[in-house]
Image 1 (cartoon, rainbow, N blue to C red):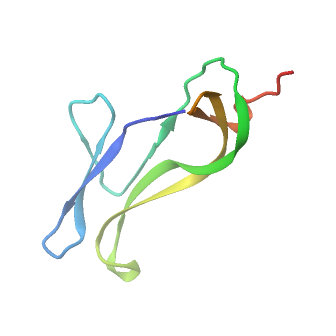
Image 2: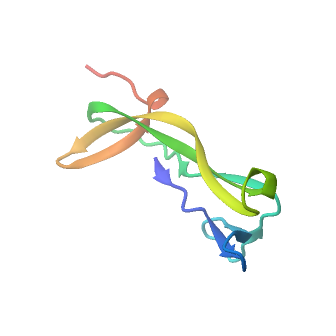
Length: 110
């Protein structure tokens, strides 16, 4: 797993809320204006064969969301949050070097 390096840029309004939002995809020269709702992946899967020692698991959120909220539900403006949790295996492949591997991508080797 590697971070996708995509991100959102929020701009503050005059009343303290975030009134503007741009989505920046990694490697892009131009941001995309977000109107109401947008989501992107936090990680990308890189397929590589390697062997290592499985030491445990961890759970990470794999998607970033941004949405515009109206006053009845909170202050007007954009808010960000993460969802879509996924379980990852922590695998050490060298001295003090580890990788996070989705649980569906590991197999036992004798």
